[in-house]
Length: 270
Image (cartoon, rainbow, N blue to C red; front, side):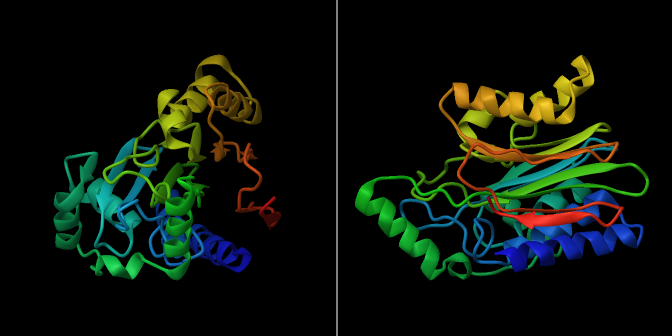
């Protein structure tokens, strides 16, 4: 898992060093994680209770407020690429299901059979859920970035929760709930999506900074406290335009990796 995080970080960082946009870096980093079966996104994503895979993803460009998101796609190898297609080529913000898939394919996204996403690990997780009726959470993959031009971007990709009801949608593709970026801050959330949706978690963090002058870390912890007050838990990564970074979580662990322009950074799980 640590090696996969490093690979995603390296891919995104290489783009930033070449002068590419924060949006490009976020897109590519998430794509690396979608291909890694240890994470709950793309191949290896959580299975619904009927054994199917329904994938959600979102991207937001803080500089322009452009957004692209997809919900419930089953046959696109990189859901984050489908979200990028919506952002770049559609007059819409969110597309869902078979219509989203047809649109993504028409704009060059790679097709796969739904069985491509199913792994032994995800099947075992579903079997545990079916035996215990206890939801197994594998997490979301997300990224935030700040580029040389001072622009921010955020993105997320997920399979949702193991054992979810088919058709369930969490916070990942809901802009302002699980994913948000503006000219001040970029935020990507993970955890109990229903609770993050209820408080519009990602945008709430951004508005606390913009409207009240709260510090980034203070705002991030306040948002997670609000999620906890409703009975939920999770974590988030947030980056502001000054390069300040926070990655708090209320779960036992949250895999994460980071790098700054001064060369500092790291990889951690706990």
